[in-house]
Amino acid sequence: MRKDILKKIAEKVRKSEKIAITSHLRPDGDSICTSIALALMFEQLGKHVDLINKDNTPIPFNYFPLSEKIKIGQIRGENYDLIILLECADVSRSGQEYINNNFLINIDHHHSNSYYADLNWVEPASSAVGEMAFYLGEELEIKLTPEIATYLYAAIASDTGSFQFSNTTAEALEICSQLIRAGANPIEINEILFAQNPPEKIKLLGQVISTLKLSSDGKIAYITMFKKFLDDLKIKELDTEDITTLVRSIKGVEIVVFFKQMGDSRFRVSLRSKGRINAASLAERFGGGGHFHAAGFSISGEYENVVKNVISKVADYIKERELKVGAE
Ligand SMILES: [Mn+2]
Image 1 (cartoon, rainbow, N blue to C red):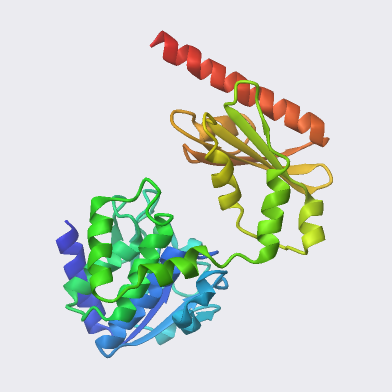
Image 2 (spheres, protein in one colour):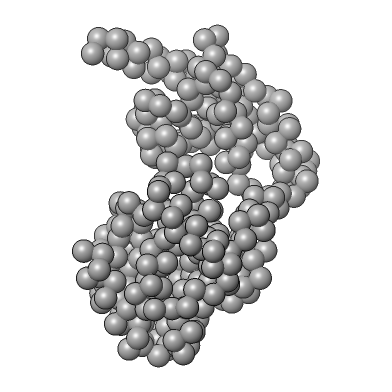
């Protein structure tokens, strides 16, 4: 299966002179670093490659020197023989509006993909598109330079949360071992990916953590980020995932409820659960949704009431679950 699609993709790449590669909106480390690695590979074959994303390259990925290769804006389809979309469930996910008449290749490792392109390579078992790009490099008989190895390693390290998430597979580690042998430096890459926090973010983390409360049984942990915290520290937007991760690490906690104040009485609530607690079905009770262990919803009301309402419903849910498990 993989062999067939790889052959077809490699053949199309070899035949193309001008290639554009794009990532999804609000691009992440996997798609950004994979796009750079693919550009280096195709350039080795003498191709002209442009990396064009709709959205800016966010911190920390803009600290990778070759992120300069990425242009921001719309792809002018008529200029390219081939356009590759990374981790886009459909064309609209790329934010690109003028590529529908082009030959498109869709490379993704998520289940939810609509197979919209001329060639679709979707492998949900892959840890990252970085892993898939590694195989494409092999198929194209690319020389694995230290630079290519660095960006592929960064893509996989980023998407596996430094080899801690459930997509950390034997295959991913085997590939990373080859990438290190080829010159990727895990320590330097980790520094870029995980040690670029601005001091304001760590101060914010302290403030949010200081709001921590636990339910009496210790299973629900909840925290709040008041708008004032962001305003005082002059922070506009930031990734708060590691605040949640820290709270989630408390022994005995089964779910983290994170209240983020958006307006005076408007809150975005994110849920991060462990084990058998289904965050998505909980979020659905509030009109939201998401994945099994990560979901969210919006809610309006006075802060104290919102917290009381949400936490009591979460507690009910956990009790229902326990009764169900007990009855099984
Ligand atoms: Mn990915």
